Image (cartoon, rainbow, N blue to C red; front, top):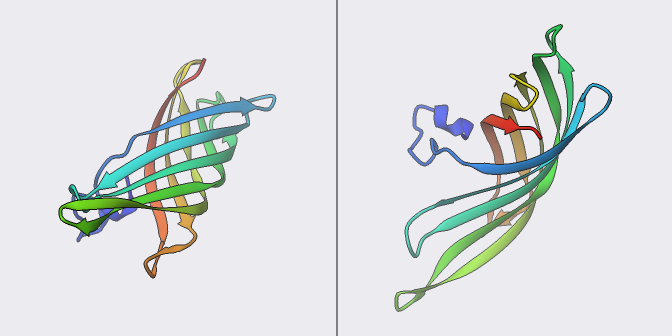
Length: 154
């Protein structure tokens, strides 16, 4: 969920939940590091005025235990990737065409991971992403979001 959702003038579009897919790997003697790839997408608008976006992100986190048992861990790390925006542009006569833009994305994340069992974990965190480029003279800005993640390990 975008942090814009907590502003007093937030719209329902700012408060939408997004779902993504994440695949990763833990490494180190005590699983103190992890890398993962995330694919997420969102869309807004109605037919003929639709704006869609997708992001493919690569992240690496350092984890350190907050408790003696390792049940709670703090994580922090960088993120790099790319995003693709597509927009419906009206052509007239009720027809429209899609216009695509691709952009580089970079940022980082931090939060806490709760280990419930050997195979299940839950985390809450904050992610900040900065986009490069612009669209029709409008500079793409930062994306800040709160994340809740449930993971199954196998």
